[in-house]
Amino acid sequence: MEVLEEKFVPQAESKKILKEKAKLKELAYEQKNALEFLDKFVKVSPKDMEEIVGKLREIEKLQDKHMVAILDFLPETEEDLRLLFSNEIISLNEEEKKKILDIMKKIV
Image 1 (cartoon, helix red, strand yellow):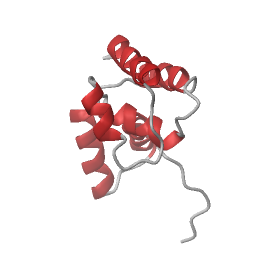
Image 2 (image 1 turned 120 degrees about the vertical axis):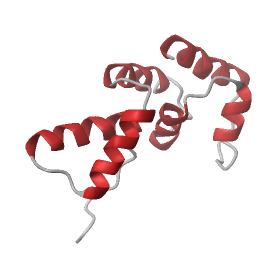
Image 3 (image 1 turned 180 degrees about the vertical axis):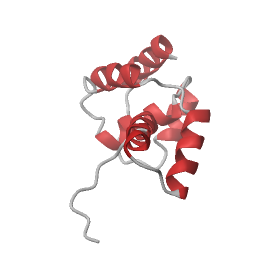
Image 4 (image 1 turned 45 degrees about the horizontal axis):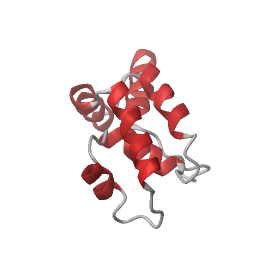
């Protein structure tokens, strides 16, 4: 099998994709387990996910992988953000951190 494209996908979108696939055909064992996990733990609806991504795109430093991590982790404090970006090269200034946390407070 050849990989044609690689894309970062938030858990909420993965859940949506698996549910659509389940309507069309029987899911494989691993897919069923993934969907069960996502049903239990994903807190963000697809509508909220799109809204969050739209607002996060306004922060120029954030790449797709950062937005996915924010959507999946749903940081509530600056400590959460620091942990989330601890292995990343970018550093967020205080204004950017505050903007991310404000976006999360409105959604979660």
